[in-house]
Length: 281
Image 1 (tube, rainbow, N blue to C red):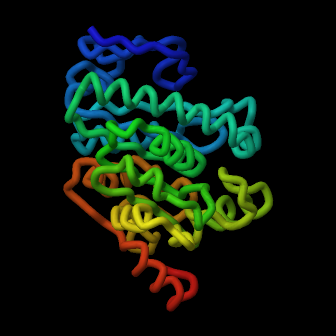
Image 2 (cartoon, rainbow, N blue to C red):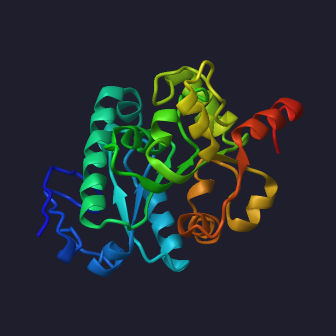
Image 3 (cartoon, rainbow, N blue to C red):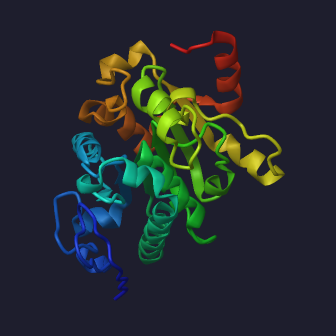
């Protein structure tokens, strides 16, 4: 029996969870974390700053309604509501250490359940923690897909090291309507990687300058989804939380998780469209 133990003050796994394949690896089980679902695959969802976990709960509900059969785990990386937003936003060293713990847990799952698909979904500040967890994964461990919803990272953040741990696709979303959180707030208080500018969840990611050849090639895995009014029919009104509604998860995110849909634009064409259009819509 494979066991893996470490402290995880999480929304789903409080205390000291034990990863054991025959029990699903959880101390407190839900219908999304049964042994059968862990044997099918793993989806890890991370909330933004503040520790409320509303978005991951809505996402979990939508994915479940859509028939995603993998285990769906909500990973709480935050200080919690008592710390509010700034404690999570500015503590880059702590956040990277938490991402390392997450990477260790994913690696333990991948080695105990070889071949099962793993998907990381991070919203806002949680998207940054997801990226840092990807960077920290051992060379022999990869996730199938990563989804960065309204990422609170700088637009020029180098995704290359994280992309090496992604087999298939990294999908990132952005919205010009997310002006309050990912334009004004990040300009004043900073992004998760401590850049005082609009975040990638507002402008989209941009190809960094002077990339190494391996990192440049890795960007072929990136697709960016820009919010447009057409997404309203999927329950996404374009604001910061629009990417996390249960309806959006059910109709738009679930096909990405299962590999049935591959939306978005390559980063090169996305940048070209942004330059030609100004504010995208």
